Length: 268
Length: 162
Image (cartoon, rainbow over the protein chains, first blue to last red):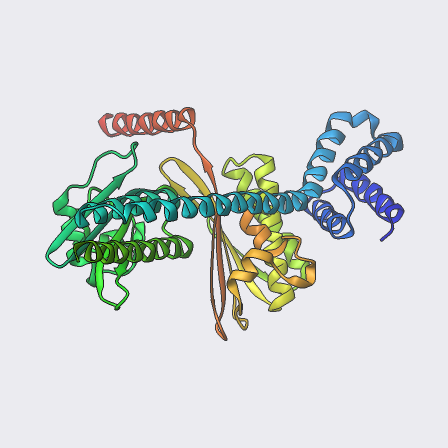
């Protein structure tokens, strides 16, 4: 399709539409818009072609019906641009995703350096608590959850931490955290908002919400704790959220083991 | 509120009634002309997808209502071979179209909710909805209409019989 061919097709299609078109001629507009996109006709060229076509329709004797012609031409132009809108939304989505990935990478780098520090705390439980708190806070921010909690137990010691969005209605108390940890094995990794009512075990949590749980697994494969997130800001937890949470739980496990090794080394 | 509308899709020409019904229903539900155009475009893209990849299928359009919003739900079903790589199909569309983001990903981006269920050998069901939030004025007017309705009912039942 040459630019000239496209232009004359556009003029003809718009003319047909303004003299008494309907869905048939609007569909022609939609197809022309799609073709313009495939052929690389720019939005600026389209605007110019449209106005030339409109002027041509008015010269062709439609001047008396000016308001009707302009309204019909506007509807036609919207059809033309709807294909561009689709593509434009795709670019915008890609830009947002790229920004989110950059932010995620930056946060993971920051967390790595924090964990290297935290694992050097003198007392083992202090180190564990710091590690888990950092991981819970980062997990909550990265998955856009209102609540993040982590529980961990080893050699008779037990640590529980919680990170709550400052805008969240209420905090979750220790009993609820213990309750979730106890039930974790019986629940699926993710509970969607729509599935909440079907999990009576979750009654102890503040409100109908959604949930994501990942284990904190020690290097020897032993399950030493649980990282869980509740109430995602928009929609339900996704595959990507689960992957991020799992990654953070693994970072926590490595940091906790490192802290334990350091403690043993220091006590020798 | 309008009933469900079914349109069989077997060729490009069937896109026309699907678009017309979708647009009319959108305007009836109070969507703007711009949103009605976007709905017609999304319908065209999934209808085209059926024609190109499967050959035939059906579109169902129906209004959905929640307290604070009206929606137009479109369901596309086919009994084709199913989509092999759903994630790629939703992210990039069909590679032969140059990956511009038309087709399924285009339709997904024009609508608010978009869900695809596809099983190899059984077929594909796409459900997509566009929502229109009902503002305070609209809700107020509806409450008033309902109240007036109840009031008239009461008056009728209070009136002495013939």
